[in-house]
Image (cartoon, rainbow over all chains, first blue to last red):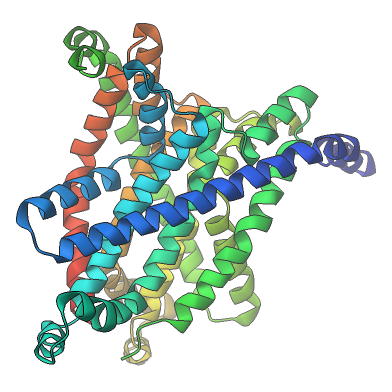
Length: 227
Length: 220
């Protein structure tokens, strides 16, 4: 029994191997954080921009926005990544794995956040628009000072959930050779023929994302819609 | 452009390969969606016991899988377990990973659904002589499921999309087959075809969800 446990620890939590590959995993952590920040900032900004454009109510433009949003809500993120990474080189554009993953996941987050922002904007009663406009506020002022503050409150719980789910997708970058955590852990595992780096990588994800999930739970209860 | 991305000859040549992939994606979804629902139901029923000794470990379990990327879980099972002398194969790994990962998501949704049913319903059901289990099965769950139907549908859409991860562990689903065809033909057309197939298959669900979500928000 003792021997079995020792062998298990020696295989999955081998101190020598872990120490050797720790720098690789840490550099993976840096890449994952960079990628995640790029995706969150550009994806949500683009989603908000599309939702604001949609509130202008220009018919053909709205159809285009709905089409784009529906497209990126129906395609699996991994399919988008593969399409951009393996497809674009055929037209002499060769985005790196990092750029492909960033672009793909930002587009997916854009689609989901546009939908959430738009639902938030439409949830504000029409009377509020009319009341604000009749007091002399411009369209932009009404949007900024009356509608968006109320819409944001409603959008925060679904938005945080979706953002976490999509940001976790940075692990998909491994498929197109991004040297993020999973990529580093996998190659360290095949170099050392030992699964300890993979265990380290898994632990790194938990350390990175678990606090975010707990914080999201807190935000969810704080912004929960109470009647 | 058309020769590169919509090459008719390559579409014709890769069609059987891609269609075999579509069949496997449908079969895989028919397996992993019920698996995830069963996992979620177990979690939600355990959470409905309202025992603090159960509540915290359950919450930690759900939060763990919300934090843990499904691909990492899959690789852990597929490439890590063989070192412990356990080789499960790609297909079983996908099934186990989905049971754990999507089970946590379904569990959270179903728990919210059960919480949304007023306590008076259970009390009334119990006072008519139904057992605790009967009250849950016949009174609470049907209402709970109806209350969170949009969320359940939305998660199911995500689960079907997530089956594309199977391609990483050589499960011959739609994306895997398309990539095989792409590497044989040196042309991205099969992947474009696969993307179109995914879109046509899932677009109606996205449209429906978009309506349901807007209605739910507007009703507040």
